[in-house]
Amino acid sequence: MSAACESRRRLKRAAGFIPAVRNPTSNADGGDEPRRSPNKHRRAKRISESFVKTMRIGIFGGSFNPIHFGHLLLAEACREQMRLDEVWFVPAAVPPHKQDQQLAPSADRVEMLKLAIGGHEAFKLCELELARGGVSYTVDTLAAIRAEQPAAELYLLIGADTLVDLPNWREPARVCDLALPTAVCRPGSGELNYEPIAPLVTAERLAAMKAARVEMPQIGLSSREMRSRVAAGKSIRYQTPRAVEKYIETHGLYRT
Image 1 (cartoon, rainbow, N blue to C red):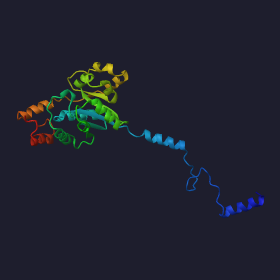
Image 2: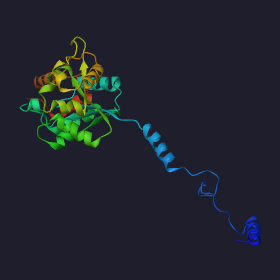
Image 3: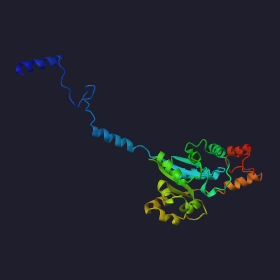
Image 4: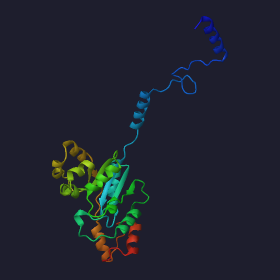
């Protein structure tokens, strides 16, 4: 291009007839802000994802036949001390160790659970085992929950007696891998015994289990005793929420 032609182009550009060549670092609106490079975008995404809170979920299984204040106190103690975001109450269809026990209909147990935990935003009802039917093995339940909540930290809430019996469950090592067994210790019950379960887990996992020890007040309530009292025409007042007590009375549960 001749010097004269280049001179004319500069004059036209200055007059606004020829747009200036766009700076590749300018934004889409023609501003001077540089575009964000792909690497910077990916870095920003990683930083953003690092601030996403991991859900901590307590899994509390049982027949809940019926639910009582001891269950609720255990769940609340675990929620508070383990900083759980949610506690899932999982009523069993058929408990493996109570297959010959006569349970109240699952629909009634579900309704009593709803009445008991209603109003507590962290307490949730999970009907997974009832929907699956058959004998409710914890390993199957935890595997299903893990598939549904792959990023969550799962804690299996159990009592001191269950901790000792856990090696007798179906696939106990896998149970301990899918969720961290979180044992509850009551005053006067002595130290928790982790020896039976030690061969099933790594030293690191065992240390995590011991660190997850939860303390709760002593409360002498049991579902079996409550059923016996109802059958004998005795009061169960202050052993379970009033709404549950009235439900048992209205629907004639546990009278025989």
